[in-house]
Length: 246
Image (cartoon, rainbow, N blue to C red):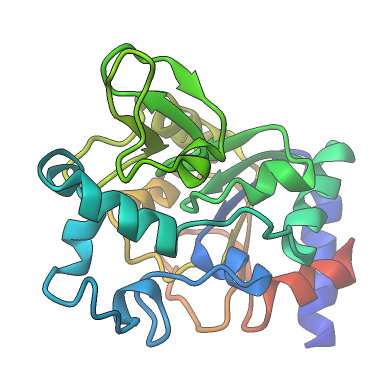
């Protein structure tokens, strides 16, 4: 492990355009549950929602056709207010402050990277930190949905106020996707952490990497031999590993 940590530090020292690509494993260390693990949101037994498929509860169809069900699930399961960034978020923000890290690409929707101080963050699945009216597009603060006493939060114009999260059946945000792909393509080092790379199309973006150094920090191994780069793979807590580097 010490040799791998040393090699990771050497990669970082030699790089000036580092990009981080992360998933749910980054935020689970803050207490945010993931979706698909045995203890994830999709496997939590709740009698209120047991007749629904998990993907439906976070779909555009559910939002439009059964908004009361959508917002009950959203309020119960996706409230990350009060959750604080962990060591991984803080280390990445520090790498950016030092001029090493140029972008964070995250599949998470909790806004913890920005809360830790990261500035350039591509949220390819959107975020719970922004809300807007589906009718007039008026913006609302992050806690609006959770503080609203109405089963379905409403705008002054009468429209539904929804989260700026990419739901099932919706297209990923174009600006975030193009920014993420461009960042990966121009990076001289790519750090992949806290993701199994099973969520498509986000997982495909790493194929654009043409840099020299690749680091994988994940509790389970990933086969990334198709990325022709000098590689170090560390199967441990991402917060623990990055804390030793920064």
